[in-house]
Image (cartoon, rainbow, N blue to C red; front, side):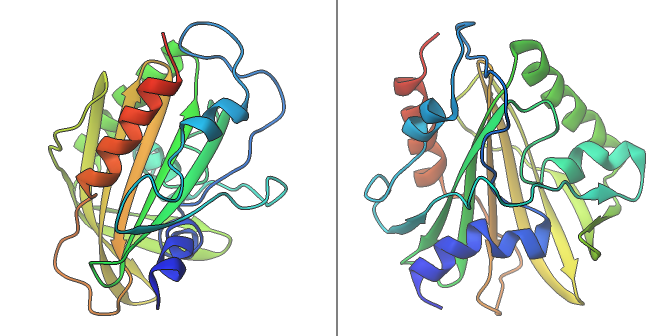
Length: 230
């Protein structure tokens, strides 16, 4: 699979493997960190584009008209972890814009980065919910999306040095259709914007661990800070 295909896979294949996908904006107003209305156009300007991250192919959102579903967890306590791997972090997101990145250097590395607009209280509450869910679902949990079941084992909080107001990250071994794959997820709050990074190796010879590349995370957060003020 070529890097461009991996970039698409970060947006599309993660849907099948992890329930992670991108979404177009829902109807209605979007609130920015400054309290002014922000449309998905602003999120699009803040999202990384081809050429922003050397060494990666970049792909964009699916059609805004595509179906937007959230993975369903087998236990209520694990719902925040399941939902954040869906097309939006949860149903409080006002708009979401996503990008996929395929590495030219690391065979099979696919990364997804998404920006979601929230109210400030909801953004803070999401981070708190994720931390609580991690403490309760450290052994394993499973999800169902469109009839596909995915199991997550060895779910562990994973410190990740990153910019932003606060963040939470974790690793897991995803078991989808009998094949294990290492997953790394980092969720960052920057003002009222939630930024999600997800990494997986799709080479078929997946290593024991995978890490969200800092060249993607740092550049995305820097661009967001330059684009969305307040």
